[in-house]
Length: 391
Image (cartoon, rainbow, N blue to C red; front, side, top):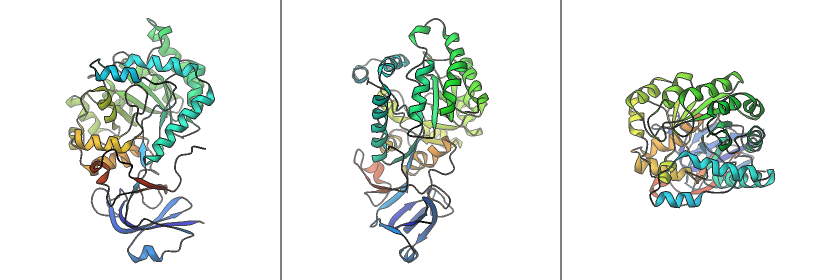
């Protein structure tokens, strides 16, 4: 058994109040003991410096946090939509239809090109402290293409999501129900072997509640867990449908009514907020304060995609959550680590407690407050443990 000790940690965030102080379970003057890439112990003071180790890392008083868990990304795509972004900044409203532009570029790209683009984005995310991420399909919108995207996504994560119900492709214009039948049948059959999750975009311009229900129920019958895009562009049935079906997460949650908040507070579905999207589309930010005060579980994720949120930076999302969504830095950090893990139903991630995956981020800062206090600065000194596979 190989033991790695990270010692002289000035501030260790465990995300377990039973181990440390406050909601983040903070331990000062700490050491983290990893055995075969699993957290074995959290020690304090001299106990950490005396612990036996095959390898030792000196944190030199820095803050150490769990790796960020990005539970909503669309990383497998070709092309970009920079001109669309520029037009939005000039006043054009955001709409779901731009997905079709990305689909055209993605369909035209070869496997090697898509593989290289995806891994470059994963490496970028890892440099910013993300140590696990979910990846969706959704930019091919045909049977063979969606299966290809799921296969390529499975090369970088074990949390792959089938999102054939992203938007209706142009060739199915006027035949939306036929496309839903394709997604819930042959396309799902082709993609399911690579996937852990099924998702749908429940929104005007995409799919209505009953169409999303059909896709999610078909995915569940194939053994996949449920996720849903909901309430991004306006009020709608997405949040309540997700809670009703017991989805792990409903994502965006930008436009919530009181009954949506009550449903999330009373259910097990995580509300995953994507503030970089609202920044990029100039939409209102979600009412995170209302969700948290009601008792809902909240996650933060990047929604990295070429149209509405072309960033992999979770620290940027934390900054927006604190500045624009009235979250405390503690709430935002928890949402980007343990919250992301909850949205993926991963008990092994998002915390640094005995039995959890031994993946930690050493910040180039004395405290986690710097994640919002120093926006835009590269604050990740090192990633310890087993980060995402990019080989």
